Image (tube, rainbow, N blue to C red; front, side, top):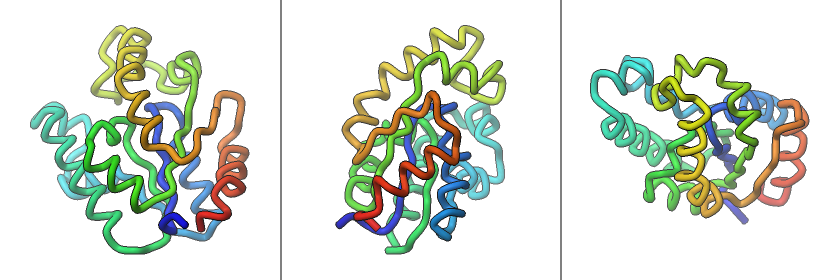
Length: 172
């Protein structure tokens, strides 16, 4: 049996934070959003960290924060940033210490959900091209890390949460 926590992974715009909140309420478990943890630790927004310290510094803080969260054996629902799985140590810890759900969405859904992308430091002006390139790089990591893959294009956050609850019943 897996550790008694559920981690949601996937691209920006896949609904990780929204679904995590709905799922945490359904399970009556605490909600942890990794981006919020990183922002609280650094006293800066993700965009500010990228601008002032760069992506490598952000990724290091993200990885260390995730590893620290996964160490104690506690129930919670964890929403990870889209790129958190690019770190091998994070992937390994997730596989050992959580039931991992990949919220998979099509490029069109992702683009519709991120809008202009102004709050997303990795997107730039050519959102579709950037999104496709990022997804191509990350997809193997999502695949390698996920215990379950859930296609979310046509599902509401509540429907996604319901499906996760059914999928993970034996893991909790």
